[in-house]
Length: 202
Length: 202
DNA sequence: GCTATAGTTGAACACCGTTGACTTAACGGC
DNA sequence: GCCGTTAAGTCAACGGTGTTCAACTATAGC
Image 1: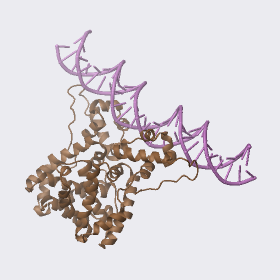
Image 2 (image 1 turned 180 degrees about the vertical axis):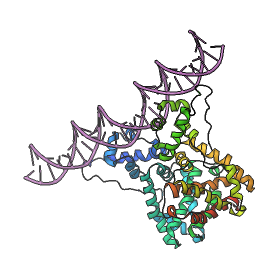
Image 3 (image 1 turned 90 degrees about the vertical axis):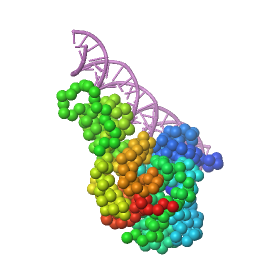
Image 4 (image 1 turned 45 degrees about the vertical axis):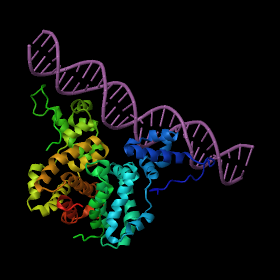
């Protein structure tokens, strides 16, 4: 699902099935995932889309705007959150770690979430994008269903563990964690996530 | 303490107390902390050091080499590790969180560890530097003193929590965690760190 | 004094994101 | 059927980046 909306063209040519805008977004998605935010240059994206680089900023304002329009969250929270809750309150942490590890392993580190996390270290606007999405679409419904106290704080603490896991296992690739089985990772990290989700905090 | 060694000039002028190399390192330290790895340009560092930019790459090879030579770890592990162990095995996690939070709060986010963590997201060579330092100088002696099983795995898991905390509280500044009291943060995160340090893993 | 070498500079290179002027093409109103 | 407006799209340029290379200077050792 998209993180930011694309300005739908109000007028202009309407005959082709794919406008330049869509070709740009497609090329951007591919290159951002492949080379990361910094590694994907506007010129390279433009070349792949068969247009001039300045057309990209004409459409999306700047590189951050293109990133926000192109990147997509790989899960639909409305679908995933019920699955996380399926096994009862006491298993939500394990299920959440399993969902992330499963997705990240399957896509081999080249996935939107990790790309966004990395980019958010350098670009404050991308950090805002990430933070708002997490809060509104992921954590808010999750904690509403759980009914835990201090949901905002818990979501922050949960983020420290989940983003830390993503960084160490998939970006920095610390061993032996990077090569460990998903089931083991769930067993190791799950309890920490569970504590932040439903445990006593102080 | 330094993370990488500076090539000491084998010959050359020796009369001044401060060579150009030291002035470059001093300027680099200041600008890297102030503006981050990307924000500190070689030309700006050179200007501050009163020297031409190409002299920097002559001395340090490239920008990463300069960073490795300039950045310093704010603690001496030989001094800090005994302090962490002072209150017994059961308090090491809390003491470690306290050490990091104390340092990071005092320096307001502009400190070598966070700067290095951020830079390591984009520069693999800096990630190597960080990983090797953590393993050899910090985690190895700590786990030797603790005598826990699977020290390599435990150090990875500990890193997920510590680096995640640094990212969320100081770089991304998620609220309410970013504004919480140090003592509260220790109470919330300490148990997770403690579990990775001495708890049962599976 | 001569020569090798380290220190140091300035110009240049290839690339980056972004800007602004410009052309082209389609539309709505008359 | 023309005409002004507007979006689509191109092109060259700007100021910036890290890095390279040839040139020059000053010192140390012989």
